[in-house]
Image 1: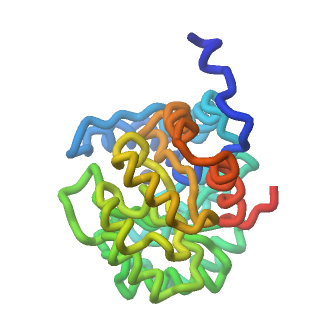
Image 2 (image 1 turned 30 degrees about the vertical axis):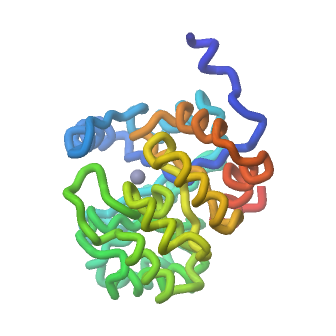
Image 3 (image 1 turned 180 degrees about the vertical axis):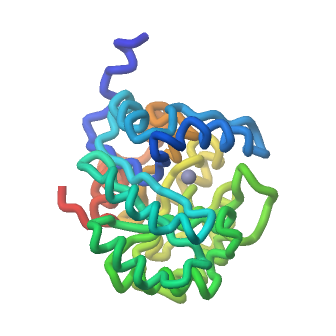
Length: 279
Ligand SMILES: [Zn+2]
C-alpha cells in the first residue's frame, strides 16, 4: 500500500487553503483534546498536528501548498501566534495569523502581520465567542483589507459546538457588505451544514468559498449547483486537515463532474490570487 499512496493523483498544482498545525511542543496535547471535542460525530486527526506532519501529508496527497490557519482563543495569544506563523512560513506553508476580538490594538497587530510577510488572518466565531458580523470583527476586517491581507472565516455550524447563528451565511454576507474590499473566504463552502442557505444568500457574491468538510457531506446535486452558479474565480479547494484525510479529499474533489478548467482554477489559480502569490 505504501507505493500506492505515493502515486500522484493529478497533474494539477494543488493549493489547500484550509489546514491546521500547531507548534511542535503543543501538538501532542492539542490534538487529543480537539479530537475529544467533536460533538456531532467522531473526528480524528490524519496527521500529528505538526508542520512536519502536515507537509508529509501534503506529499502523500500531491498537494504543493497549504494555508495553515491558527485560532487565538484568548487575546494574549495573538502576538505569539503572529511570531510562530512567521517562523513556519515557507514555499509549502502559507500561515494565516489570528486576532482575538478582545485584542486591544488590532490595527497595530495587523500591521505587524503584514510586515512579517504573512498573507492573511483566520477568524473563528465559535472559538472567539463572537459573531462574524460583530463590530469588533468589522474593525479587524477593515484593518486587514487596508493592509492587503486576506481573511479566512469559519462559516456555518461547527462540529465541536451546539448549533449557533454566530457564523451563519446571513452574517457572513453582512460582514462582506460592511467591508466589501476585504478578500474573504467563507470556509466549508460558505456554511457548514447550511448549504441551501449558502445557495440562497452567498452564491454570486465576491466571497471565496472553499470546499473543506463539504465533499461527501453536502448533497452532490446542491454542491454542483453552488459551483455552477458562484463566480468561478471565487471558488477554492480546502480540506481542514488534520480533521480530514487530504489525499481522500483531493480524490473526492477530482471526481466531481465539473470541467478541467474550473478544477484548475479551484485547485490553484484562485488560491494564488487570494494570497497574492504569482507562482
Ligand atoms: Zn478548520
